[in-house]
Length: 487
Image (tube, rainbow, N blue to C red; front, side):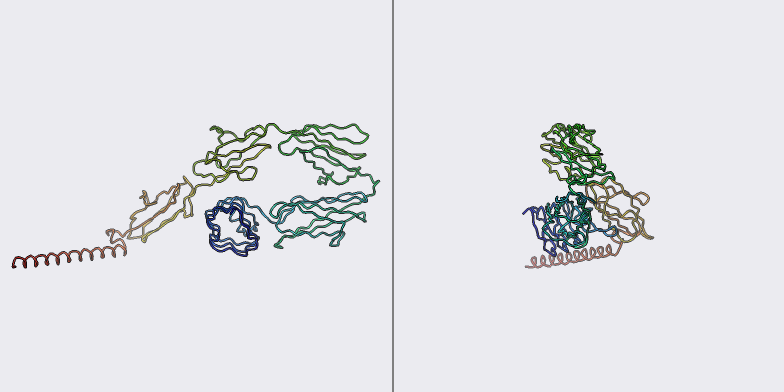
């Protein structure tokens, strides 16, 4: 059992999936409550929870990602608490627009307006309005691409527009009804002989971004006014470089551009006809793998430490080992945001490198749990935080009440030195159990408190019974001996 979907479950009882090591993904998107230790010790890497899901105490989790919702500044959600406790990623499912509509697009009379936007959210519904009316008709179509928990892309097609200026609005609402988003744009319909031009692109493995003179990014599928200024930015996709860009405009000599730091920037002004752009790209032969190693850890390649990056040939692989700093344990290694699995303890391999990569190495600080037991007759002062970091020293001050003195101070069963009432505890690999006891001055250990007195009298009673029994046994033996002599 790797993936388990119970999206309609309203609650999950205590220990329901506890210690299911084969369970890797659990969908509880509609659960209102996840009970105590319901997923404790399980093998879950991806957990899906809803907006407002209450998550009771869990333990021993190795989560990669919680797919849920962030709370407010005043109150964190339980999904955020899991993120903080286990250091996993929180994939926020809150409805949001990730790539917006343009404010205006231009289409020629009789053409179809094609445009779209990207958004993130769960169970999102969309309502379309055209010129103020909720619209359902043959001349508007919408296609949504993407899975429920991933970024989605909606593509709209609007045709047979009769107005010169049209207002298009889309409203989005998530399944929980907590968040709504509204976007509005203008669709301008111009006559076929209006002074506009189009841009056609040829080539692959590149991205084209077009912005107008105000800096707003516009759609590369629309028409453009010849009288306005536009800026084109062409950059390669990961793992490629731009060799050359050719701009062709009818009646003019072709313009050839070469990249500056792998980016081509072209200003279009006073364009007289449609434009075609040809982009030539090629594969990068040498690729860079960057390492971001936290907490002073190091990356070793073939036993030798490297810096912040390493150059690899295309389609090659890199094997490396993580040198874990003292006081920490290796938490996880992320390759472009995705968990990279170990090939051996603290060892990893990146196969078939085809683009520049980013590796992030995360560690967990070793923390010792601190528990304190103090007997009657004195006080203990100091920092009583629940945990102490590996190697950290923490000083405690112990004082005895009047008529009492310090009997003993132990940490994990070992007596520690107390000087001027102070003793030091150092964090290590084990939890720290501090026990402080006191005794009344001038009394033996048995008389140091009421418990000692009880044990003392019990001891005397046992001793008395033993002596009486011995006397009786001795008398019986003597009596039996006299009887034998008489016989």
